[in-house]
Structure formats: structure tokens, C-alpha cells
Length: 594
Image (tube, rainbow, N blue to C red; front, side):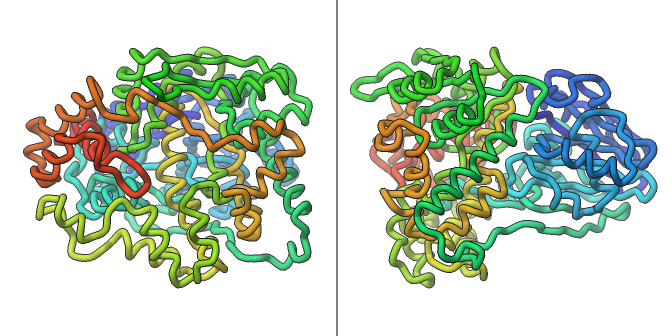
């Protein structure tokens, strides 16, 4: 929902309003229903609105609260805003809208930076105190909504997307060598505060930053669930855990129906999206719109999973839309997805989500989606090998399966100026795994993946691709109460049945067995699983373009070796090494970097 941007000056100069307007214009797809700008003294704020809650102009942003002397811009949804409104009204606060944006402002006035502890939802916001000159930036617990920062002498700019900051101008667009090493080794994940560009940072999830008028700032990290066996769950049976998982997820999906417009579901036919449909039906939702995407078969590769989504749609009597994409659309989808990426992302799912979102946006503006279950409940194939591993060997086992390359290999494929003296990605992962608050090797890795990988891969992917079409995606598995429960589930129950065992058994209470016992699926895009034809041509053109030669990221012999045999060289997770290089260069060139 929406796109925000802003600038605060620390040097006495006025904000660059023309630059702010350019930033805001880039985010029009995120908020096609309205736009606004506010400025006073050293602060300027802008907003692009997608109307979901309070469809009147009373909900427009930037929202100025003259009584409290606060100005707010906000991206996301506070699902418990009605309850908070009642609580704040009882405390004497008067409301002029029915929006969740106003609830954020009142909640900040009432509780200060602790306001985020009261929010259930996904959010990135900026609140400006006109009396003190302070600016407060906040981001939700699991980083569902992004917030990018461009610090420079005397000024800070911020926006919901990195390309918006580039449009504002005056950004250091040189490649960050440490971030490049993360991209090439940590399966394309670049953790906050870094981005691939030196001049752009990102606010970490679960963080509130208070920025003073002189530019100094303080951070409050307000959430990190314990991955331990909590006393309050002692004595629970397997069935007790299953019931608890299902009940907590039921509350999460119901919470995400809060809207003044209809809400649908992206239905892949896998367990995660199917159980969302089942729980909504159990709660009495009728006429629910569901959407599945498929692609034309290429050779012996199937391009859809309609067989399974059809079963769910029939079982729960949804208004189902099967969206079959001809192969001719995939190339356009590739170009569009790269343009929509706030940062380079190698997953082929980006293209599927981009095309799916384009089609769904013709019907609805809000959908629920099943992202997050695998990272919270051990659904990927790199988790089972951690079952009997001592905690002090978690790094060894995890890096061997998840990392694309080790440091020694990196030094042979990057040009010398882009290598770094230390092993920053491995050191980062080691430090995260060694934090207190996680019992087992699996607990430590799930905490890392849910707080880092999940945020800067699947979650970012869904936000970028859906918001490119003004479509708001809500993710009930990323409800923070569900995430806290998942962190406490005993590892053996998560690893059962090849992963997500506790969810699979819980789902048997509401789903047909064919959905639970099927082979794990994905968003198949056959036309680009193996690089050939026009898709290989795009990668070759990007890697041999003058901009790529001038940038000189990769060893020419390595690039030539990959281009000579495009589909042979794979990472430990099976990703195409050539695609990883080509995607980065296509993104940099598309966004005018070099």
C-alpha cells in the first residue's frame, strides 16, 4: 500500500522539492490513487496513495495533525487499527479520519517510539515532530515494507524504493564491494544496512530510528523472537502444537481481511496458500476470489500447477481465476520485473509474481499470499541436514549448502579491485548464528533465515512485484504472533515429513490429502529455467555491454566460460551462475548505474 518519500536537511538549506517530486513520481505504480506533498523548514514529505482503508480524502497523505503538531507518511497496513483507535479515543484523542495512518500518528504521540509494540501489521512510516524538528522512521518486525535511505553531507533522503532515490539525483552509485561479495556468495542476499550501491542504505526491520535536527540519530531494535523452548509451552503434545499452529494462523488470516475493499488470495496449490483459503472458508468467507498463474509447457517441463489449485478452488467454492501466460509474455515479464526490482534479485519467481500481479490487479487491489512458511517452519532442503548437528557446527553445514561460493572462489571470479580482505559474508553469518537466544543448530539457522534471508529475498520480491501494479500483498505467515510461535516449535516437529511437518499435520484438519502429500512445488517459468534463445541473448548483451566492460566486476575468462556453456555451471542450490551475473548487470544498466 503506497509509496513514501522525504528529505530532511541538517545544514540550513531548504529541501530539494524538485528532486522529491521526481522520487515520488517513480513510485506512482505503488500508489496510483492519489499523491501529496508537504514541506516546512528543513523537512519535506511526499506520498503516493493506494486506497485500501478510508477511501475518502480524509485519509490522504502526507497527513497533517495540527492538534498534535505531527505530519505522517505511511506505507502498509495496521491490521488492529480499529482496536487501537478505540483505546486511543478512550485516552481522549480525537480523530478526523477512519484511516490507520491517523492511528499511527496518535499512537506515536501517546507511546513515543514504543508505539510499534502496539502495532499488528506491515509498515514503514515517517513521523515529523514540527515542534522539535525530529523525524522518526520505523519499519515492521519482519521487514515486509521497505525503507531505503540516502545519507549525504547535510541531508538525508528516504523512500519506499531504491530507484526512487536514484531519480532524486545526487546519489553515490558506485558499487559497494562488500555488498557485491554478499550478492555473489550469500545467495544474492545483501543484508541491511547495505545495498549494492555505496550511496543507498536501508533501515533494518524491527527498527525505529529517531533523527534529531542536527543529524544525529538513535536506533531502537524492538523485536527478535527467542528460538528456544519456552516454559509456557512445556508439556504440549504433537496434537497440541498442531492445534496451536492452526489457531494462530487462523487469527492471522482473519486479521488480514481488514480493508474497505475486497481481499483475494494468490493460490499456487501448495500447502501454504491452500491453508489460507481453507481457514478463510472455515471462518465463513464466501465468494473468495483466488488466482493461480501458469506458463506454457516447454519441452518436458510443465509450466503450471493448476491440477492442485483446482482441487482447492473446488473444495472451498472460490471464484477462481486461472491465468495461463503464453511464453511470449515471459520476455516482457523479465524486462518489467527488472524494472520493478528495488535491488537485484535472482529468483525466477520475480517474473511469475510480476505477471501474476499485473493480471490480478485488473480484479482486486488486495490479496493474501503464502510467503514465509518455509523460512519459519523449516520447509527448504537445507534444513534437514541440521537435525543432529551440534550448534557449533551450524555455520559449517549451513554455508556448505546455502552459500553460492566461498572466499577462495570469489577471488578467482571477481576483478581484483572488487575483492575484499576479509570474509564478510561468512563472518556476518557466524556472528548471527552465535547470538544468544537459539537452542539448536536448526534454531540458529531458522532465526538467521527468518530475520535476514526472508526479508531480503522472498518478502522483498513479493512487495516489489505486487506493488509494481498497485496490488497490496498480505502475508499471514509473517504475522509476528505466528512467527513467535513458530520460533518456539520443537525442531523435530518442524523437520518431520521432510520439513514443515507440524503445518502439514495441522493442515490435514482442513485440507484435502492430495494437497498435503504432493511434491513441493514452486512458480515454474520453463522458458528461463535453462538460458537459451532471447533470454540467453539478453544475458550475453548485458555482460558484454560497454557499461559492463567499464565497470569490470567479473573476470573476463570466468564470464567467457559461463557463456560458452550457459546451463552447466550451477551453485550448490542449483541456481544458474550465469543468470546471477547477468541479472546483476541487467539491473544496473536498467537503472542507469554505470
